[in-house]
Amino acid sequence: MARDGDSISLAIHNLTKADQGEYICEAVNYVGEARSKKKEKPVFLSQLSPAAVTAGETARFTVKVSGLPKPTVRWSHNGRVIKSSSVYKLIEEKEEYTLVITRVTSEYEGEYSCTATNRFGQTTCTTYLEVKKTDISQAEKWVEKMFKVTGQPPTFTVQIQPVRCSEGGEVSFNYKASGDPAPDLKWFKGAFQIQPSRNCIIVANPDGSGFINIKNVKQEDSGLYTCKASNQFGEASCSAELVVFKESVSRKQEQLTPVSAAVNDLLRLECQVDEDTGVTITWTRDGKKITYENMTAVLLITNLQSKHAGKYSCQAQNQAGSQTCSSVLTVKGLIVLIVLQSLPNSQEPPTVFLWSVLVRVNYLSVR
Image (tube, rainbow, N blue to C red; front, side, top):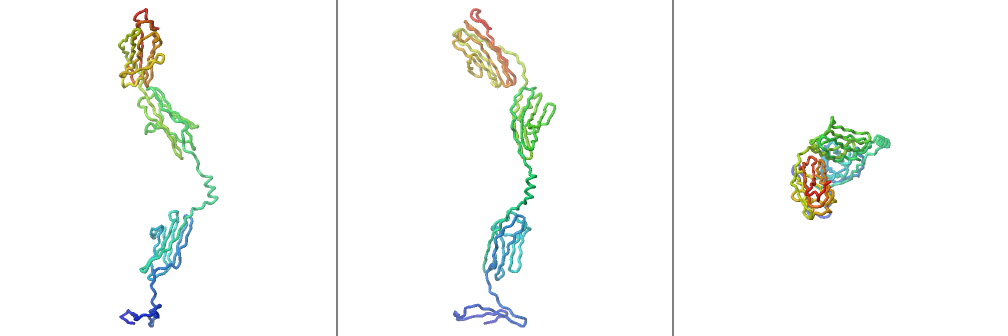
């Protein structure tokens, strides 16, 4: 044994099995005595136990750890290190370490670990925390049932339909909606809400039906109309388009070039159509069809015979309406047909005239 100041060392030479065992250094003076301690890695003297708590309550985990030198203790939740906060409290008392979790919610459920470390080693113990939902008492269940709000979102049992109308006319969009409670109804043209006025009447009946009525419509009233129904449980909507045409106006009549034909010849009846008007021309006589040549409505009868006699009609139609004129043809000989036609406009009903005239008195009669 040798001493160097405050350091004392024990050297053992020529070791044998008899030298093995525990060695203790003891120091004594007139004040007292002291003995050296054995150095060791951390050891858990008590283990963590699983816990199950109700949401809103407090959870607590406690372990007892020994080790020399004194170990450092770290807590973690699902692998993430826990730090002291308003929810987590870390308590240390001698060899006892406690984790307190206040106001537990479902997000705090999971695996909890405690790791103790010193320079001689590290050890960990793990447990699990289960968070239960709050139990509702029978009284609370009764109150919830009695005062629970029930209802249904709105639905349209009858939806509004598209409308086409001439300028100056009157239109209505009709609907029927259901819901609990009864929904509130609002009307929109495009993105803008419609308010009642002298020419716009909005009606909502207690049975869920209703309508919007627009008088003296103008072309600027054209557009997409939407009816929206809403209550606290949701909303529904239906939409339809209004198309307003210009008011009909009369036009000056124009006489077409006369067309003549005789028995066994080709009979050609023509009606010129403006390419941009959207006018439909229909010639009828026992179901005869129309052929089109360069936007011209043409009725052709080749090798004219007496069997072609009958009532011929020409109908011109566009979005604003239609007009028809007719003539009865009796074939006896040479004939000439003259067609008088006003060029139609897409915003007004067209006017059509079909005339048959006598070329030879003893060959043609017109009624």
